[in-house]
Image (cartoon, one colour):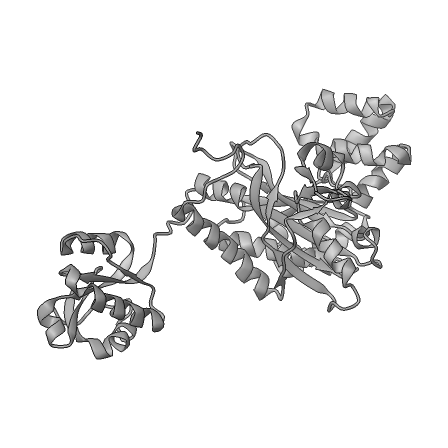
Length: 428
């Protein structure tokens, strides 16, 4: 029998869970600072929810599907992303929810794709969205949240850049070269792949869509001049990014199109700026029509999402991944197993007082117990010995300073609270 995980999935041993918790707690803390509330949705959705607006590649090639049981079976999907679930939930209770809607979520998602550096079939993803705001204040705020999170994770200016474009800007370019509106979605998909294609491949794909050579040349020229002068939405957005003090983390780039069909207006991607590995690590944009398409009334929205996988690799590559040792407050040790019952009582009282407390339950000597306590990250060891116990005392050893003191059991929790993270003042 195989004991390795299913391809594209991960085992989270405790050391990896500590990183995952630290990462998402940072996302959660920053989200709350900006006034966002946490939500979640079901692991399974109707496939139709994604088929309508996410795009053929995601639905046909990357989504895990199954058929429900019963007399009227339905085709279900294991969620590959969170935005359609968000829009469905909002559409269902649109009139009841306070506006603007500032929500974030940290779901588990699945996509059937080739596992590679920074990508897994199963991943945990941070999503943050604001709905009910027509103005570009929403776009700027989402980017401000993103920059704050990345900075608090340890990334600095120059290590990442947010590349920003606008779907309507790109459609304006298509109109200028005389492209048929029917090929606009295909042109956006090709631009979304431009970083992965050789120039000749990109041009050949545009010709296959029916563009003439002069049209292809004209489009390439406009995509490469990287000027948004005169396009008011982008001018306003970059002005707001200046007001947030994050403009230096961003740049205009018309090569950004985003592949999902539901995007309207602003689109953006966060790119790792490593010289050896430039890649997109997150993406998002504005989706003003998605709630309407799911049966609600018009409610503009904008959001971004990124997973722990690729951010962890960015931090590791720059040697910025934090060392997160196991941490407990107290380890209760005993000279002999006959003191086990008293050790249980002391450990329970310390837990009631709020101390993270581990207790020895093995029949091993004191030296091994103290080594286990230090290896487990405990600050203090409470040592039960017959003579001290007879006097109503226990030995308290600071495992960081090696100091030890006899303390009355009755006042043990108070003593530990007063001396937390400090040296004991008496050597025994």
